[in-house]
Amino acid sequence: MKRILLLILCLAFFPLIVMATGAQSHASPVQPKNSQTSQPHAASGQPKINEAPPVPSDVAVEHIVVVVEENHSYAQIIDNKKAPYLNALAKRGALFTDAHGVAHPSQPNYLALFSGSTQDIKNDSCPHRFTTPNLASELISAERTFGGYSEEMPTVGFTDCSYKGYARKHNPWVNFTNVSAAVNMPFTSFPQDFSKLPTVSFVIPNLKNDMHDGSFEQADTWLKQHVDAYVTWAMQHNSMLIITWDEDDFSVRNHIPTIIIGPMVRPGRYAQKIDHYNVLRTIEDLYGLPRLGKSAEAAPIRDIWK
Image 1 (cartoon, rainbow, N blue to C red):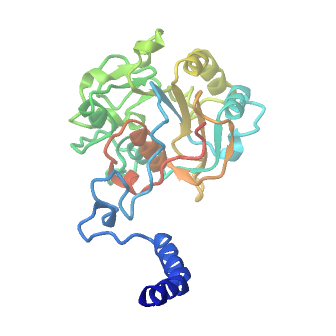
Image 2: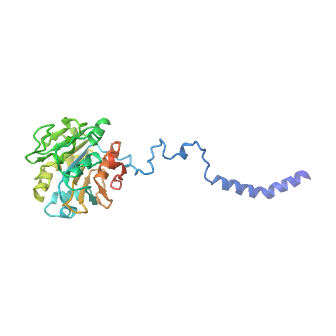
Image 3: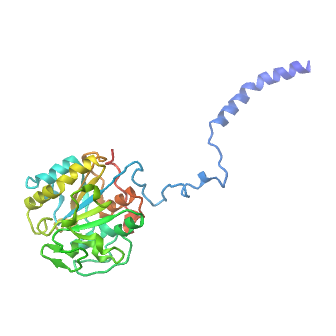
C-alpha cells in the first residue's frame, strides 16, 4: 500500500519537476567571480570602453600609397570636368562625402595625418624638430617600412625649407628626429617595380602639381601620369591608394575629398564623417600599430571593406 501511495505522489508531481528543470536549463549561466568572461576588457583582445573597434582582422593590405593634394574643397573637385582622372578614381573606389581637414593652414594637417597630432603648430613656419612617435617610427618598430617621396626635393635627406616647387611644410617626416634621413626621398626615387615599395609610402607632388599653385587640369594630368600604373598594379597585388587633401579653400567646414582604392574596397560614396585622424587610425589598424595621439580617439574606416 505504501509503495502504491508513493507511486501516485510521484506521478502527480512529475510535470512540475519537468517544468522547473526546463526553465533552469534556459536561464543564463552564473559566471564565477574570477571567470575571464566577467572581465570583458582584459587580455581578450576586446577594445576598451572608450576605444572604437579596429578594422576587421581579415582585411589585408600589402602596400599603401598616400597622395596628398592641396587647398581645394570637395565641391571644387568632385564632379568637376576639369579633373576627369580624379573623378574616375572616385568612381572606382570609396569616396568619402564628409571628409575634413583638421586645421588651417597646410602644415598642421600633414603633421596630424603623419603623427596623430598637429604638434601645436598653427602655421607653415619652418624648420621644426619633434621627438614624438609617428607613423614611420611605428612602422619601423613593427619591422615594416616607410618611405616619403617629395617631388622636386633635390636629394635624399634634404632639410632646407624649400627648393623650387618643393616645400618642407608639406613633408612632415623630415621634422622627426626618430625618422631616418634615408626615408626622406625625392619622388625620382619612387620605384617603378611596385613590389619594392615600402609598406606605407607618402607621395607629395610639387606646388604646381598638387593644386596649390597649379590648375585642376595640371594636377589631374600629373596623377594620371604618375599614379595610374600603381593603381592598376595595386588592384592585382592586394594594395591600396589613398588620395586626400590637406585642407579645403580655407572655409570653416574644411570639407575635402578623400578617395580610397584597392581590391579590398567596395566602390561607392560613403557618408562616414572622417578627418586625418580617422585615416591614420585606419592605417594603424591595418598593420597592428599603436594608435598615435588623437587617432586613438578616432573611429577607423569600416564600411568600405569587401
